Image 1 (cartoon, rainbow, N blue to C red):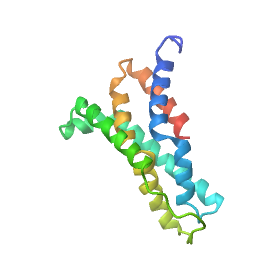
Image 2: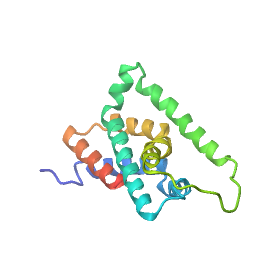
Image 3: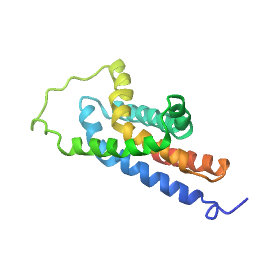
Length: 166
Protein backbone atom coordinates (compact mmCIF):
# COMPACT_ATOMS: atom_id res chain seq x y z
CA UNK A 1 0.00 0.00 0.00
CA UNK A 2 1.30 3.40 -0.93
CA UNK A 3 2.19 5.98 1.66
CA UNK A 4 -0.74 8.28 2.43
CA UNK A 5 1.29 11.42 1.76
CA UNK A 6 2.32 10.30 -1.72
CA UNK A 7 -1.09 9.02 -2.78
CA UNK A 8 -2.56 12.50 -3.12
CA UNK A 9 -5.08 11.72 -0.41
CA UNK A 10 -3.84 14.50 1.85
CA UNK A 11 -3.88 17.03 -0.98
CA UNK A 12 -7.41 15.98 -1.97
CA UNK A 13 -8.58 16.22 1.62
CA UNK A 14 -7.07 19.68 2.15
CA UNK A 15 -8.47 20.93 -1.15
CA UNK A 16 -11.98 19.67 -0.40
CA UNK A 17 -11.95 20.72 3.23
CA UNK A 18 -10.73 24.23 2.45
CA UNK A 19 -13.24 24.78 -0.32
CA UNK A 20 -16.28 23.50 1.57
CA UNK A 21 -15.27 24.99 4.92
CA UNK A 22 -15.08 28.45 3.36
CA UNK A 23 -18.46 28.08 1.63
CA UNK A 24 -20.35 26.53 4.56
CA UNK A 25 -18.80 28.87 7.19
CA UNK A 26 -19.71 26.95 10.35
CA UNK A 27 -18.69 29.83 12.62
CA UNK A 28 -21.14 32.19 10.98
CA UNK A 29 -23.84 29.52 10.91
CA UNK A 30 -23.52 29.01 14.67
CA UNK A 31 -25.10 32.41 15.28
CA UNK A 32 -27.95 31.69 12.87
CA UNK A 33 -28.50 28.29 14.50
CA UNK A 34 -28.65 29.87 17.96
CA UNK A 35 -31.10 32.49 16.75
CA UNK A 36 -33.38 29.95 15.04
CA UNK A 37 -33.36 27.67 18.10
CA UNK A 38 -33.75 30.34 20.75
CA UNK A 39 -36.70 28.66 22.53
CA UNK A 40 -35.07 25.21 22.77
CA UNK A 41 -33.24 23.60 25.68
CA UNK A 42 -29.59 22.57 25.36
CA UNK A 43 -30.54 18.91 24.86
CA UNK A 44 -33.02 19.81 22.13
CA UNK A 45 -30.41 22.00 20.43
CA UNK A 46 -27.87 19.18 20.56
CA UNK A 47 -30.39 16.76 19.08
CA UNK A 48 -31.31 19.23 16.36
CA UNK A 49 -27.63 19.92 15.59
CA UNK A 50 -26.98 16.19 15.13
CA UNK A 51 -29.99 15.90 12.85
CA UNK A 52 -28.80 18.88 10.76
CA UNK A 53 -25.28 17.37 10.57
CA UNK A 54 -26.74 14.07 9.38
CA UNK A 55 -28.85 15.74 6.72
CA UNK A 56 -25.89 17.88 5.59
CA UNK A 57 -23.74 14.74 5.41
CA UNK A 58 -26.27 13.04 3.12
CA UNK A 59 -26.70 16.13 0.91
CA UNK A 60 -22.92 16.52 0.53
CA UNK A 61 -22.42 12.81 -0.07
CA UNK A 62 -25.06 12.75 -2.81
CA UNK A 63 -23.59 15.92 -4.33
CA UNK A 64 -20.05 14.50 -4.31
CA UNK A 65 -20.84 11.08 -5.75
CA UNK A 66 -24.00 11.54 -7.81
CA UNK A 67 -24.03 15.26 -8.56
CA UNK A 68 -22.52 15.04 -12.03
CA UNK A 69 -24.87 12.20 -13.03
CA UNK A 70 -27.89 14.17 -11.82
CA UNK A 71 -26.72 17.23 -13.76
CA UNK A 72 -26.19 15.12 -16.90
CA UNK A 73 -29.72 13.74 -16.54
CA UNK A 74 -31.11 17.28 -16.63
CA UNK A 75 -28.74 18.36 -19.42
CA UNK A 76 -26.60 20.71 -17.33
CA UNK A 77 -22.93 20.63 -18.28
CA UNK A 78 -20.10 20.85 -15.79
CA UNK A 79 -18.66 24.06 -17.30
CA UNK A 80 -22.11 25.65 -16.95
CA UNK A 81 -22.17 24.60 -13.29
CA UNK A 82 -18.75 26.15 -12.72
CA UNK A 83 -19.78 29.37 -14.43
CA UNK A 84 -23.11 29.61 -12.59
CA UNK A 85 -21.74 28.47 -9.21
CA UNK A 86 -19.55 31.54 -8.78
CA UNK A 87 -22.33 34.10 -9.14
CA UNK A 88 -24.58 32.04 -6.85
CA UNK A 89 -21.94 32.14 -4.12
CA UNK A 90 -21.27 35.84 -4.76
CA UNK A 91 -24.98 36.74 -4.71
CA UNK A 92 -25.52 34.83 -1.48
CA UNK A 93 -22.59 36.59 0.15
CA UNK A 94 -23.75 39.97 -1.12
CA UNK A 95 -27.29 39.45 0.19
CA UNK A 96 -25.93 38.37 3.58
CA UNK A 97 -23.67 41.41 3.68
CA UNK A 98 -26.53 43.81 2.98
CA UNK A 99 -29.28 42.03 4.92
CA UNK A 100 -31.31 44.34 7.13
CA UNK A 101 -30.59 43.90 10.80
CA UNK A 102 -33.37 42.67 13.04
CA UNK A 103 -34.76 44.65 15.92
CA UNK A 104 -32.49 44.84 18.95
CA UNK A 105 -33.57 43.61 22.33
CA UNK A 106 -35.41 40.57 23.62
CA UNK A 107 -37.88 38.79 21.37
CA UNK A 108 -41.06 36.95 22.22
CA UNK A 109 -40.18 33.30 21.55
CA UNK A 110 -42.43 30.29 21.67
CA UNK A 111 -40.97 26.85 22.19
CA UNK A 112 -41.45 24.74 19.04
CA UNK A 113 -42.81 21.23 19.38
CA UNK A 114 -40.98 18.05 18.31
CA UNK A 115 -42.60 17.89 14.85
CA UNK A 116 -41.66 21.50 14.14
CA UNK A 117 -38.08 20.78 15.22
CA UNK A 118 -37.85 17.84 12.82
CA UNK A 119 -39.14 19.95 9.93
CA UNK A 120 -36.84 22.81 10.89
CA UNK A 121 -33.83 20.48 10.79
CA UNK A 122 -34.10 19.92 7.05
CA UNK A 123 -35.56 23.25 6.00
CA UNK A 124 -34.28 25.92 6.66
CA UNK A 125 -31.30 24.74 8.74
CA UNK A 126 -29.84 22.11 6.37
CA UNK A 127 -31.08 23.47 3.06
CA UNK A 128 -30.48 26.34 2.25
CA UNK A 129 -28.44 27.55 5.28
CA UNK A 130 -25.87 24.77 5.78
CA UNK A 131 -25.83 23.18 2.34
CA UNK A 132 -27.22 25.75 -0.03
CA UNK A 133 -26.78 26.06 -3.79
CA UNK A 134 -23.21 27.33 -3.50
CA UNK A 135 -22.19 24.44 -1.27
CA UNK A 136 -23.84 21.89 -3.54
CA UNK A 137 -22.23 23.40 -6.65
CA UNK A 138 -18.84 23.38 -4.92
CA UNK A 139 -19.27 19.75 -3.80
CA UNK A 140 -20.21 18.67 -7.32
CA UNK A 141 -17.20 20.51 -8.76
CA UNK A 142 -14.92 18.87 -6.19
CA UNK A 143 -16.41 15.45 -6.94
CA UNK A 144 -15.70 15.68 -10.65
CA UNK A 145 -12.29 17.36 -10.43
CA UNK A 146 -10.50 14.54 -8.62
CA UNK A 147 -8.60 12.34 -11.07
CA UNK A 148 -6.93 10.00 -8.59
CA UNK A 149 -7.89 6.36 -8.30
CA UNK A 150 -11.45 5.56 -7.24
CA UNK A 151 -10.34 3.99 -3.95
CA UNK A 152 -8.23 6.98 -2.92
CA UNK A 153 -10.99 9.38 -3.94
CA UNK A 154 -13.55 7.43 -1.91
CA UNK A 155 -11.28 7.43 1.15
CA UNK A 156 -10.65 11.17 0.83
CA UNK A 157 -14.35 12.01 0.55
CA UNK A 158 -15.29 9.69 3.38
CA UNK A 159 -12.69 11.16 5.73
CA UNK A 160 -13.58 14.70 4.72
CA UNK A 161 -17.28 14.21 5.34
CA UNK A 162 -16.69 12.38 8.61
CA UNK A 163 -14.40 15.14 9.87
CA UNK A 164 -16.49 18.05 8.67
CA UNK A 165 -20.03 16.88 9.43
CA UNK A 166 -19.42 15.12 12.71
